[in-house]
Length: 252
Image (cartoon, rainbow, N blue to C red; front, side, top):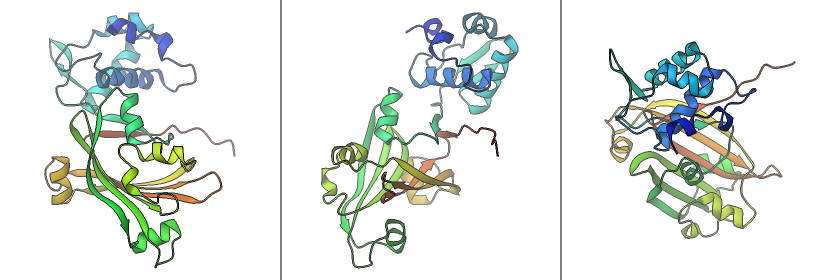
């Protein structure tokens, strides 16, 4: 797909999709993630993007400035804007419950995992509380380093009741695919996000400096009947993600 085809507003611009410059910024970021806009290549000039998208140059300029702040593009005086050679941050929606595998596939990225732990264990106090287990119960636990196109992105540690996942060894790629087949895929979740500095061990796995900025995410996922199905504690690279949430004015 050419840049002109990719920026065709009929494919992505929505009347109720929020500020126009934000929608354009998201579309250009997707272009980088999908390889339509390749690292080191020039971004089309403002006037050309404005003509393709039928947006004002002021709107286009605001989107480009936001991309520069995100590190997606590099602006060179007298030469224009260029796609950064540093991998772009992935924009992760906080309103969509998907697995890492599904999310990377949707972006055209190849996801892989390195297993850190997988089996049945005695639950920790946090797992007992989150999953409503008795202290003498066992818990199914899977922990892995997740990568996208070979780049380490996150360390995921998921815990589930053993009647929902009796054999953790059957999880080879997507946990949610396994749960889908047994009718146990969660339908909603609560997430808590905290800013952290990465420990030396986590930083080494994520291939960043010890003490670098990271994000810690705790997620509790539920079945339709309200039962807790999954408790996940994840560590994300701080330079790899932008988490995005859509907010609407309350009518109360």
